[in-house]
Length: 110
Image (cartoon, rainbow, N blue to C red; front, side):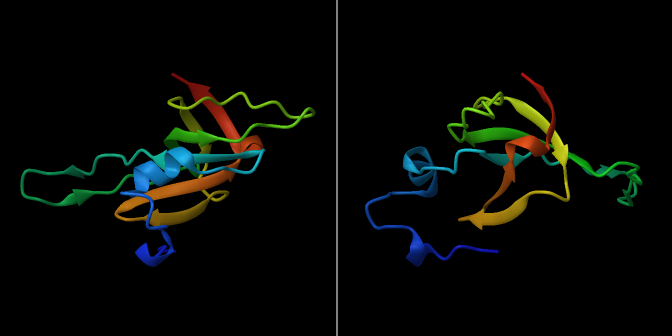
């Protein structure tokens, strides 16, 4: 899903500035996915690894405030491991972001 530039208010110079001032729902986390490098042979054939588990890595860009019953553990800049089936994917300009519930994060590290 691509968000057209018409929906980005004119007061923002770019998407990064808009993300810095945006609000996110209390239990949600905005993540930028870390793409794995493609492995190629010398002749240019792309090697595809068969994934046994549907997990993905990403860097936390924005975190909600949390609730009294669910405090947020993830912090901006942390690397997280999460189920690749749970996030909502969307594009802003040329960057792809993922929005998922804090409870769907499987592992955190810095």
